[in-house]
Image 1 (tube, rainbow, N blue to C red):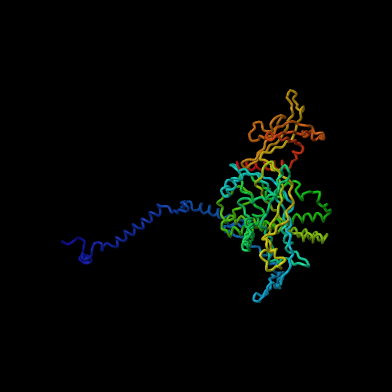
Image 2 (tube, rainbow, N blue to C red; image 1 turned 45 degrees about the vertical axis):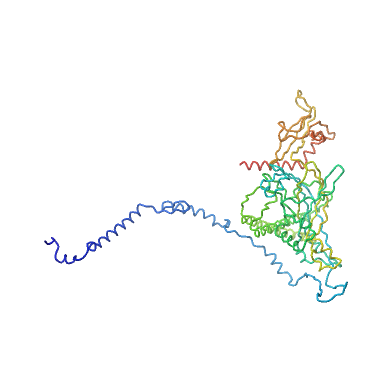
Length: 615
């Protein structure tokens, strides 16, 4: 039975063709519609997002994120922004370049060696003739302006692990320390002048033998102690534990040129300041900031400090200009030394790869994990600032010199010749006993330019090449200094018997005093009133209790009206309850005591430091 609607032609077209082949185009069309429909559905139903640094960014918040990123980036693009790339300051070349422009191409120094024909035969005891010279024998000048100062601090716990010897020196905790710092001024330029000195009979030392520099091998601190029979024999103070010293090597009998050259290399790459200005240890909390500035110490009639020996000052504009130029010269010299130390510290940090661990001469605990690059970056910043300040000082000095030349050319020339300056050197005596009186002196050991140069010396001068170091003339002895205890008191007023306003009060007289006590990194003060016949201590005793007992008060017959008004017109008699020693003090002298002024400053700074840490 034929299919309805199908013609013979239709049946012929589909004959032998599968069904799916007949409808393949429809199947493909349906699949395409489904795929495009799926993509269209997912596009309109899902959100585009990206996860960046743990944060999901979508089309809804992408604009805000871009704005925030641009704001963070904007300050870094500013000219004043710090560079993210660490740049090490290049070595200053202008001065050496300018010197090279005007310098002669021919050498002005020559190294003299003996001309000896080693192939020739010589008879026994035959003299050898060679080209030798007689040289001037230098004298290393003595350190001057010696001065002393006693300090109190608490050594940080971290230092004890690095320097175990400190645990026996400063028992704790807290590891409270008191020591005496001894400083003096040393003329480095004066040593170079001695090396370059010459006369008709002797030549100056060749510049190559000392490279135009003074290398200080050791700073030797001696002290004498006052005893009942007088001053004891001088004793050499040991170098601080954990600080750079070459004293053991120098004391060896068989020291050679290789060891000497190794010491010189270390000194010229950052160790010199450790030898002549050893820093104290890292301390807890408050640190006195005058430790590195002996010029600011209050001199106690130290040798060379007596104003009566000073020459009278010049008058007029010349004197004023000279004073300004000398002040700038001093600042310039100080900056020169600071720049040399910074450059040496940067070189040492770069070569070691671990940075300088010395820190400041005396400071509080820093971060032990601070990187070497951060140390170099900070040192470089300080170096650039110091160089800028040096340039400004040099310009200011030249302007003042020009002004002085217009008035007195010879005076300006004298100042130019003296440009250079001296350096402060110091050492620390850690083993001091409160109540003991000491005196100190300092001497310096510098590298001997003759050492190891026996072949270049006449036989009669070859003994100059034996010592590895030249010892300076010792400084004068310092003024006596009495080591003070961590608990100190000052009687500032004395109100004698019968001065009380209330008539019914038992009036035996009283004193007013300030008591200072150092402990655990800070100074503490208490102002107290004590009646005659009582212990010099706070009412509740505690940490402000002394060993002194107030016995009586005696009127001062030469007291002025001002003394009477200020209750400083009586002698105060006290007795030590431990030793039985009696002491008479005067409030008018104790009120102006330089030690009291110093303690007030340190106590105020301590409280400021303590308060700032509480904020």
